[in-house]
Length: 154
Image (cartoon, rainbow, N blue to C red):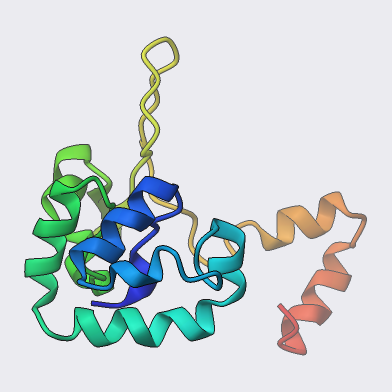
């Protein structure tokens, strides 16, 4: 388990973590006693914790530590994260049809507002779909835009 996934910031969480990992002497070690000194001495603390964490699987530690109120979890690959039960439940990924392309997956709106609900009703624009329009609003002439296209600037 990667120690970066163990945000034991509260003092009780730190003490529970050290006790659970079998290194209670670190609780009173002046280098790690307070949150700010722990953070400042992370380069010293990390190998001590990793040595203990390496003795069991990530799944083991996640179960044990979460049961003790120490937030922990496995670091997922992007593919695993996007296909997780939570992402499916929240509808984070939505499949929509894009004319000429077919079905595409896009990120849905993840914030759900009861008074102002929203939904995605169209796919994102195709790359450069609005470039000419935006450049025209910025004062570029049709000839300027044509030249930029010819020079592969846009």
